[in-house]
Amino acid sequence: MFDLSKIVRQNIQQLKPYSSARDEFEGTADVYLDANENSFGSVLKAYHRYPDPLQRNLKKQIAELKRVPAEKIFLGNGSDECIDLLYRCFCNPGKDNVIISQPTYGMYEVSANINDIAVKNIPLTAEFALDEAAITKAIDTATKIIWCCSPNNPTGNNLDATVMERLARGFDGLLVVDEAYADFSSAGSFTSRLEQLPNVVVLQTFSKAWGLAGLRLGMAFASPEIIAVFNKVKPPYNINEATQLKVAKALQHAGEVQKMIDRLVKGRAWLQEQLQLQEGILQVFPSAANFLLVRCESSRELYHYLLKAGVVVRDRSSALHCEGCLRITIGTDAENTLLVNTIQSFYKL
Ligand SMILES: *Cc1c(COP(=O)(O)O)cnc(C)c1O
Image 1 (cartoon, protein in one colour):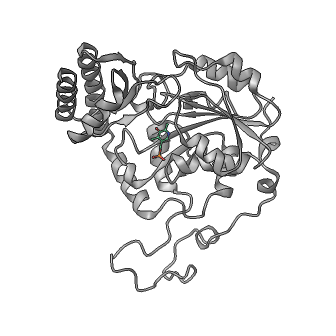
Image 2 (image 1 turned 135 degrees about the vertical axis):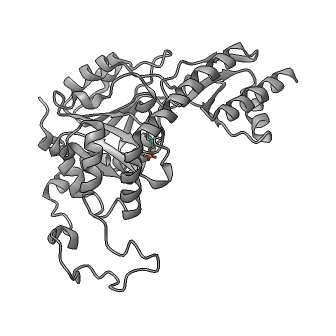
Image 3 (image 1 turned 180 degrees about the vertical axis):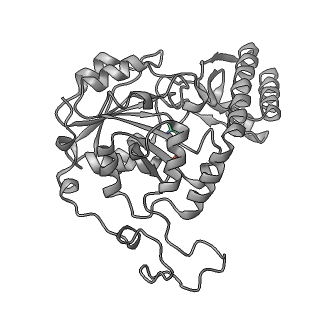
């Protein structure tokens, strides 16, 4: 049976969190002399006040969009902050371990290394599926997190939700489902299962489908108790005012975002088809994300040829099961055409 109090680090349970000026006075007043801001304002005519530490306005809007109550939402300076916080709240340096399944997003391992947490790699199968039996076997008393990325980066496929749910139910640590690419997938979000699965944390981001990578806003969805632990540990003003305002504005244009997503999904189908017809392209893996993993003949030479033509893709050939593979983000129609034409001219050489 999952018991949150058993997996929060001792020092975090005992932590008396920093209390900011904005925490201690929440009402409105005529004169604010409580936070040592510049009372004359700023040359930008904005931003001279510290932002809301708990981003209440923004969370209200996100709650509506995602159909998750605000008390189950945490906002991070990118999902990358959420990833780091998961380690700092739940994993004891030098003692605990986490499970990841390569090939997957690199930050799970980098962040583990930064926090001195051991990583057990239980690779995805050759079909890029979770190895449920091996993961179950690898869990020990010091295992705190199982990382699942769905759709997975760099392979593009969804992981099996039934398997993830079974893993969560049989585990007294946290199962994290990173859904950075969920907006491009027709598989439903794991947020709908939070009620039944108290040890699941779902990550999403404004960096991909929403096109706001530069603003740095990531979301974690989990039980109010887990969210409370994140709030205790995060830097007081982790989401700056510009980001809070701009993302709130963007959220009023969800329909336009959906149109871009639809075009990218169409572009993905077109690119998939074109590449499959191209000689020299050995395999185009099915993708539920805004990129394709493509196995190519002479992948390194192709990579450099594309670079010379001004097209940058990601060389993933050193990742497990990804020999000879490039990861290609879906572009605009014109970019996709240029890419296909350049690949075609490379293989004609
Ligand atoms: C891009 C990506 C992220 C990064 O999210 P940020 O919100 O930009 O920090 C997280 N997870 C995966 C799997 C990604 O590919």
